[in-house]
Length: 118
Image 1 (cartoon, one colour):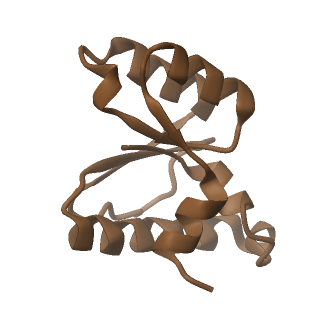
Image 2 (image 1 turned 120 degrees about the horizontal axis):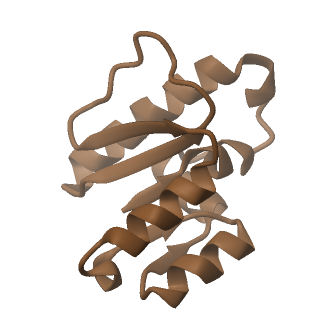
């Protein structure tokens, strides 16, 4: 699974923009709890620079990129079996790009509700 971190953050208007670093850390923690419970490994990609001292939980790889969409598309394109991948995003263009390579797409809002119920 590859997660568009900024899309998942932005899927809920909970004030994440007032403390983007804190929101990023909380999301990574929730992803870690979900990954541990589900047994699924995932990569989460955020736009921007890495946060200092951000600890990645087991089963979660955290990446930062100038463009998360480009980084996610490149991961899917480079995978030898992209049909086994699921990309979490609500970005229509990114969804089209990764679907063209065989990856499944899951909406960011629905995924956020699963990993962090309201």
